[in-house]
Image (cartoon, rainbow, N blue to C red; front, side, top):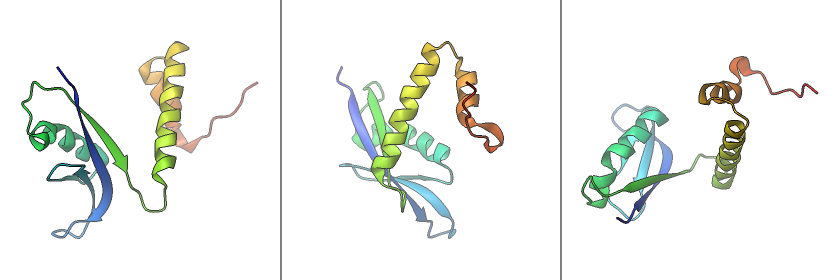
Amino acid sequence: MTEHTLIFKVIRSRALDTGTDVWVALPEGAPGSVSGDTLAELLEEAEAVKHFVLGLSKDVPVRVEFVFEVPGVPVETIDSYRQARARLIDQLRQAGLSEQDSAELLTLPGGQALRRTA
């Protein structure tokens, strides 16, 4: 079965009803939108509606991609960081680090920076 791809353009916007800033995802080439107060909420909502937006049944595979437009930050910078992070996570996995240890290392608790030890 052919996998479909749904690309959402993600922006920050001010909600008209509450006046708060929210994340909004606009599907490319399809009607509708989803929103969330947090990015996690937005991503969950996009996953929940992906088949509906494309008019497909739930048994059809749909991959969701996001293009983030953040004022003052070029899309290429975000994409480059995400690709570098994915490569680093793969290297950490190959080095034998667990998912949890990798997450802790990359989260850098306390705002600490990685320091060379050798």
